[in-house]
Length: 237
Ligand code: 5RP
Image 1 (cartoon, rainbow, N blue to C red):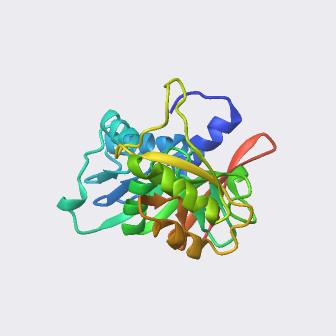
Image 2 (cartoon, helix red, strand yellow):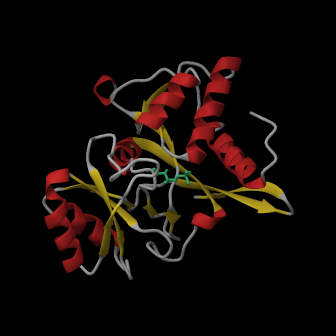
């Protein structure tokens, strides 16, 4: 990896590297999405290139993950060609004390949930700022919606007490379009007291494809923190 000096980037690199170091030869690996996971994918590629790691294949959770895997020489498979995923590495936007997550900051949570839930071991890579006492306290909850259903889903979310806003593109006019061709509604809930119930309730609204609550899915959280100017990794199991 590069001679990066920005401590936040160094921390993301280190946490990504720590996750990638857990992957064993012969594994089928879920490749997550986001800036932290990108370093894990890069390091997996380095381990493959050096010969330290052999015979892994990746299952990408997004177009971004697919592009990075190709760049770093990780062979890819689709879910119809395999019967298991050994380990998945993915980021998160919030992590609560029960290892429940909000994901979807990169609008990839639908495919991420498919892959991460299938993995025998799901490792989450975050910086310390993502740890919260209660989900929803710092991050809006992403909900992927098929385009024709945006208006009724918006109304249904308001009835549940949420404040929805359609995610708009950056350096792109109009809304964000997901890898599946859908839209994302980001929702502010004042209190997510029961994430498991809210996850089901939202997914039960006709037109909702998937929401960013990941309840009871994560096995290990690798937290990158800066202590005395140096990156340190803490493992929550
Ligand atoms: C994408 C995600 C990402 O994993 C999440 O947004 C964290 O990304 P980053 O590591 O860049 O903070 O859920 O849908």
